[in-house]
Length: 211
Ligand code: VGL
Ligand code: ZN
Image 1 (cartoon, protein in one colour):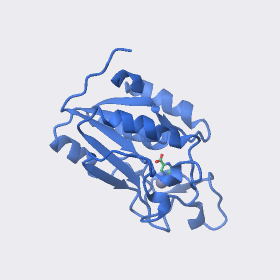
Image 2 (cartoon, protein in one colour):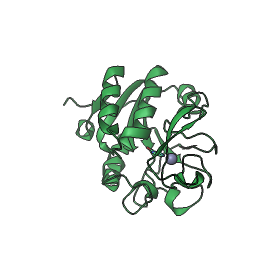
Image 3 (cartoon, protein in one colour):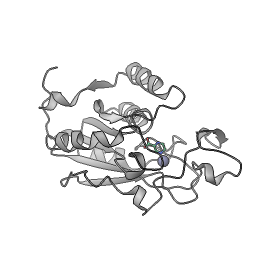
Image 4 (cartoon, helix red, strand yellow):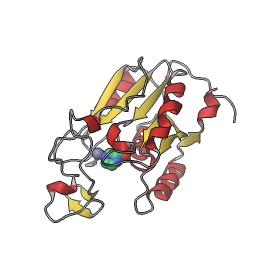
């Protein structure tokens, strides 16, 4: 694969490298921790990095525990459509919400927190699941003059996927760094993510392209 040259209009968005998404966490992504060294290496190639954090209040509507009688991974209907119910995860200011201890990206300029509204889940780091409520990240990236968004992190089939799609729709060039992601894979979500990203023209690469 041809080497990718990174410049000042490029930004790396590192998605949700948090304890709860790693083995031992409450919503652990299989082998999620394996992306940590890959991302640490990758980030050295990028002068501009943003970290995101899933950051829910304790009674968040995406938690099965907030719906008596419901279990994790059941689907319910909410104001904005279908919502998968998750185990409690990434509760604000808890250990599960902290970044993995080995994540080392000291030059990251922004930590963007999402999923902060009790009644709206947020997979995308740009728009919450009602598809209307912005996180502010589009404005930040535009004001900083970025044109190309590289994405890495957890989970490929949720947060990375929806973030890539929104970035593309907002007119950024988007590249997903595949070996720097891992997925949850519920109900065919990995295949659905790959298909949707291909249809939208989101580019994919491997971390070796930055060597
Ligand atoms: C995520 C499920 C629930 C993610 C966040 O970051 O991919 N997935 N909350
Ligand atoms: Zn969440």
